[in-house]
Each structure stands twice: as C-alpha cells, then as structure tokens.
Image (cartoon, helix red, strand yellow):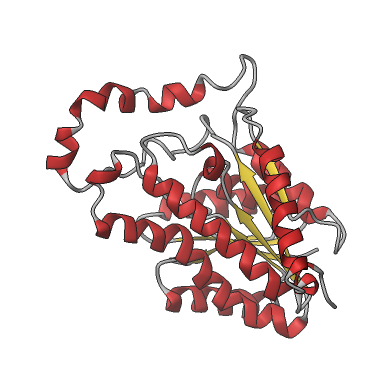
Length: 295
C-alpha cells in the first residue's frame, strides 16, 4: 500500500478520490486550503468519515499558490507517515466568461492556481521521490484541452499548461524511477461545485459589451449536460474509480494517459495519436530514453 497526497480534496473529484483510495487500503492525505477555517466543514466530513470507517485518511493544509505551503504539507506527510509514494494533482478552479473581459491579472491568477500550483507541489514532492527512486505523479487533467468549448477560455489555457507541464516533467522524473499518469475527465455535470463556484471576469465594462451572448453563457452548464446520453450519470466517482484502477496497476504498467469522458467526445483517440506523434518526435531527437522508466 502507498502513502498518497491529493491536492484539492475538499470537494468533488479530490474528495471522492481520497475516500476511494483510503478504502483501497492506502494511507491518504487529503489536502485543501485552510482546513481549520473556510474548509473546516469539508475537513470534518473527511475526518469523521475516516473514523467511522476505520480508514487511514487524514487532512493536511496545502495552498497550491504558495511554495512554502506545499513544502510544509509534503514535509508533514513524510514525517508523519514515514514517506510519500504518490501525488494526485487535482486542485483547480473554473472561470466562465468572455476572454476579452478577463484581465491579465485574472488569467495570471488562474494559470497560477491550475498549472503553476501543480509545479509547486511537484517541487515539494520530487526531492523525496527522486531520493527513493520510485513513486507516481498522477495528474487529473481535462479533455477540455481538445474539445475547447466556448466561454471557458482562461480555464482551457490553464489546463493545457497543466498538461504540458505534466508531460515535460515526466521525461525527467522517469529517469529517477518516477511514473506519470494523466487521467483526463470529460465534463462532470453532477456531484461537483465546479460550475456553481466558477469565477467571472473582472472587467464588467467589456463583459457588458458582449451582452448579446449572455443567453449562450447562461445555458453553458445545461448545454454541457445535454452531451451525456440519457441514463448515464456523469459523476465524479467515475474519475475516482479510474484513479483507483490506475494506481492499483503494477509498477511500469500504468497508462501514461487515460480518458474518463461521459460525453463520448472521442478525445481518447485524439490523445492516443498525439502521444504517438510526440513519442516519435522525441525518439527522432535521440532522447528516447526519456520515454522509459528507469530504476
């Protein structure tokens, strides 16, 4: 069994994944911002659940926008549990609105949380994983980098950056025995607070200039849900189940990329071809060894 740190575990995919992996028998550290304050109720839900079910499930304070916070959280996990084996990079936030109306500060903030935040956690965790020459970095990405729907521009850009950082980090991490898996959920329309808690653009004047498009934005969530076939539940538990499946696979047999898409957009086919193209290019450069897991 592994010691696992999950980011963004207060709600949704991260929350369910923490419970699932704990039931699998792992030691799980569910991280979130300010578990004694703004997320106290979510933290209590997890700790109470762990007690009621006899699970090795704990909550740790981790703000992905702070390198110091990431360092402290990882150090606390290692000190308390005696090590760290897996990092599930799940933290993220959604922006909805017109691209022009998002200020540079808006977009910089979202990139900071959704992409650089994962990099900060990697910088905190990789020294431990490199020293033991083993471990797994599992990233909860998004099919949105392929489907690129309207009115979610900054979010699409941040998830594309997140994915790219995961890929290029994998080349170097593999040389130290560290595996990478990217799980790409499609639209999750039930069981999360992603859309209700989404942020809007700061520039109200520019937003008003796009007012004739407001009816389209207003039915964004409805339009997304309509892509799911009747009878299919687009629930985040499906993503938690896939993360559980991937982490249960033996060393060296975990997929580099897997898709969980209730909208059946065909992203799995696109990414399979894209990864084959990328791997062929890297091999042509003479860097094929970066695609291999080393001991």
